[in-house]
Image 1 (cartoon, rainbow, N blue to C red):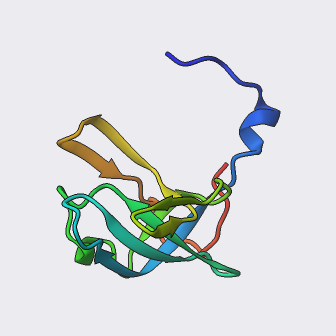
Image 2: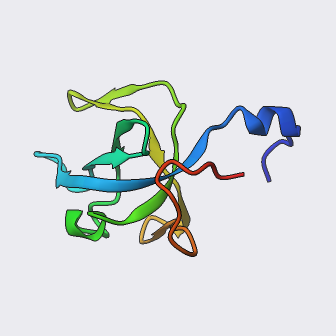
Length: 110
């Protein structure tokens, strides 16, 4: 188990529902998929290492849970501005988190 944090620290993490409006494999990789995500008031790009389990079509026009306030990170010449959240037991069992029912793009997750 990781170290504990207080509620103020947790609230610094901006977790939102985003709708994937575009997805494509990153050339030269087996795992990376570039996602363009609409959060209502803004859009961001995410690079997800899920290409060995899911094709780009799995993500398009679907809503997932994302962390939106991470520092941008450059990977393979592309910038990742947010991160899709997923549950996993190992590299072959990874499940992206989705909202239970439809909710507005950009809704905060608390």
